[in-house]
Image 1 (cartoon, helix red, strand yellow):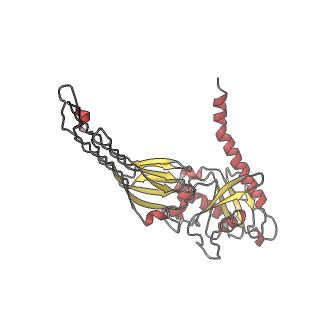
Image 2: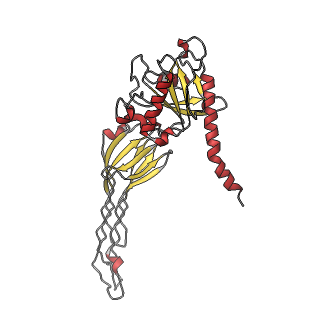
Image 3: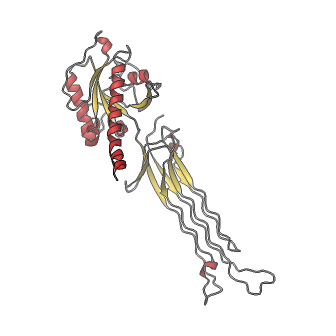
Length: 340
């Protein structure tokens, strides 16, 4: 089951209290305070793990608590610090405070860590309070409490290409043909109930990731269908592919509707590079690319995933666009390196 939004309560560890202790040693006529400090409480950390693809585990357990620090001891021994608690999440997870909706941060790459609740500081023992005029202090400090908060974890899939289309536009079929992904495929609407990712292998060890999301219908940005729930999963794609079946009644109207739904959801998303992909070309029996108005599109393609038609041109077009975007992003870095 694909779960992409959960709430969890986290509590960092409380710091250990300081100790009040006085040294008692044989042959030491002048003893003194030797109470150690308390240990630090454990932190709560969110960490990206590429082996995870969903937040399902957090539906079974929604409360996490780090270990408290141990109290200080005599002979100036500091208490042991509490162990941290690490919450593994898929890369692309956004972390917010559930009460204030404040963005705490996000973890994008494998191993990225985010401190979400800080453990309490350990209290000082009586040895800390020794002064020239106060040589036998009995003061000590309690440990500070750790932070407690409720977090909202939201997963936004990371992919190079996002497939956008109405139900039964052929998105899942295409993904199953060009990658090892095995999304559910059937001849009824809304077959895809959760996003799917697939790695597309090319020659010379090249590859990129394609994301298939549930079908977009009119009003998706307002919550109709499954669109609003999953449109966020294409926010982090680098380019969009609007998929229009070749047997649709009005190619231009369907393309315009898809683009308007994306624009209504996010202007930033609508500004991403895009192409138009006409699917189910095998219904015509010949190669034909309809003429539609697609301002700024980097290409128009006609394919049949079932018939393996036009796929090489499509994948090559995607790769060339991704390569051009990568080169453009790296150019300022190269220019900066050349500066004296």
